[in-house]
Structures are given as C-alpha cells and as structure tokens.
Image 1 (cartoon, rainbow, N blue to C red):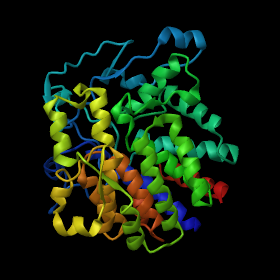
Image 2 (image 1 turned 180 degrees about the horizontal axis):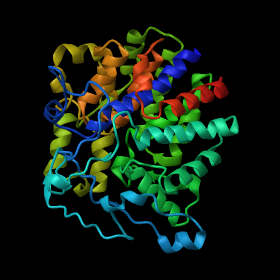
Image 3 (image 1 turned 90 degrees about the vertical axis):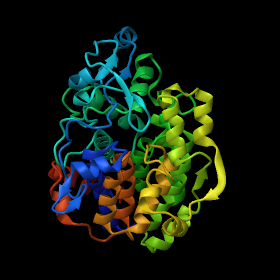
Image 4 (image 1 turned 120 degrees about the horizontal axis):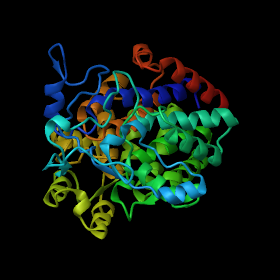
Length: 413
C-alpha cells in the first residue's frame, strides 16, 4: 500500500471529525443552514466552535451507573465523566438540569432550549471529538509497542478515559458507559463490551472507526478483516458493525491500492443490503414511542437486523431521489451502519471523491456526521494523492497528530 495514501486516509479521519463536530446530531438540516453561513453559502464551510444551545441535543441526562463499591474493592477506576459530570445522571452525583420535553428527531427527553448543551460543549474550531482521540490512543499504543497488542490498547483505553483532564469532550458514547459499568462489576477487560441484542445503539458507527484504522496494520485484506473484527469485539458486540466492516475493510484497502475509486465504490455498494425499515419510517417508529428506549428490546433487534433482498444502487439513488430525500426520508442520518453506509457512499459518489467537497457534504448532512465522517474521511483520503494542506494545519492539535501519523505509518509499513 502507498504510504502517502495511508497518511491521507488518517488525516481524512481527523479532518472530517473536526469539520462535522459543530453540527453533530443536527437532524434537521435547516438548523445547520440557519446557524452557519460563509458569505452567501449556507451551512458548514470551515472549522467552527461547538455552538450553544444545540437545538436538538438530548445529551443531558445520559446515564452512567458504575458499581463503585466493587470497583474500589478491585482497585479499578470508575470515573469517566470527570468535569463533565453535570451533564450525566449517575449514582455519584445529582442531575440538576430538568428534562422537561420530548422533542427532536426521536422524541427523546431533553431540557428546555437554553439548557440543551451541545454534545461537544466547549470544543473549539478544529478540535477533535473523543471518537477521533480514541483513534489516537490506538495509534499511540501501536507506536509504543512497535505493533498492535490488545492488552496494551485496553490498558491505554482505560487510562485515557479515567484520568482527569485528558478528555475535553463531554460526549461519552453509550458503548463506553456500558463498557465501564461491566468493568466496575469485575468483568475481565477483554469481555466488557455490551451486545447489540441488549442495547440497540451498540450497533453504531462508533464501533467501526478504530477497527477500520487498525486494519491498516495488515498488508493483506484477508488478514486485515480478521484484525478489524477482533478489535471490534473489545467494545462492540454487534452483527451490524461486523457486516459493515466486511464491506469497508476491503473497500479501504482497494482504494489504498489505487483501484479506480468510482467503479470500486459501486462494486462494494452493491454488497450492502437495505433494511426493511429505513429513513422516515424508522424515525417515525422512534417518535411514536417517545424515543427508541421505549421500544421493546426484541422489537428493536428486528427493526435493525431485518434486511430486504435489495442492495445499494448508487446510480439509481442519484437518478430517483434528491439529496434532501436521501438524507432523512430514504435513509436516516443516525448512527446505525445499515443506514450510514448507503449515506456515506452516496456522498462520496455524488462528489466524485473530491476530498473537501465530500467532507463538507458529510458535515452538512447532519445526524451522526462525526462518526460517519471519520469513515468517509478515511475512504476519501485513501482515494486521493493530495488533500488540502490547510485542512490539516488548522486542526488544533496539528503538530501532535502529524507526528503520530508519521510514527504510526512508519511502524506499520
């Protein structure tokens, strides 16, 4: 694989993450257009601060209930929220912010508008989210050992999240909170991942990003897929994440081998099956229950794992639907791989793998544009010999990211 393309793929992940951060979880695209404008152009066009308030945020009140007594007995740290604790409902603080309404795409409980704190409250233009920074934790573990060692990554993962002031991002995904709840109950670290069958949102884009990066450590696609799937199991026990990786790992490697991007994308898109319930119908199902958490577990499993006989046809999508229809009506822009793969493939196809155009299109698509963007950024970077230099240098931690990418690529090649 070409080392320049590998580096560009990694840069793509960090760039797309930071670009999307200000409008992460904006489901109604009108809020993006109304809230951001560059000249006469509506929407995100450059790195921006996380605004306050977030019109659709239901971060406040997310739960985290570790077994503190057992953790202390075992000598295991339990605090992963630190200075962000005021946003969380835990068993070691009182939530002072009242959840008063059911609004937004999924009708989840949320505070009044002036207390709808952004998921990434406090992050500045060009800063990366926790999802991207955990990629860096993985990269640093590989650099330190000279290769990937599962136990080293897990140790570094625990240390990063339990050490105060390392993580400036308030948004700690549910998979992390569930992982540490299991960890504080004495579960062996390699087995702390929650199952999608028990918690539907474990089947999310967040489970794809690190395994996809780790697949770069293998020269053959055959081996790369095994490495990716094994790493996935550390944090996400999800069939949908595994299915997505089975498409994305060989696609990423084909782009790194300089296969023609558009034809290659169409080939792999045809391997992605469509779910029976999708887009507006899925969102309505959530809203009808006042949030997905109120849907019985077995019903949620069926909603996300019952597939049709149809697969993604990018040319047909372009011909039959407008972008506004694709982003919401045909597919939801939420965090689920079975919805996100068609969306990100459509955005790459429409923008013909132009790096900046694809990254901006993803940001302005809203929804889970941060984690979906990391995947899109990896693919877009892998398909390009050059990406705009200022998109790298305008990242807040450009210098340290640059060094980590250089060292990581040197080790794996």
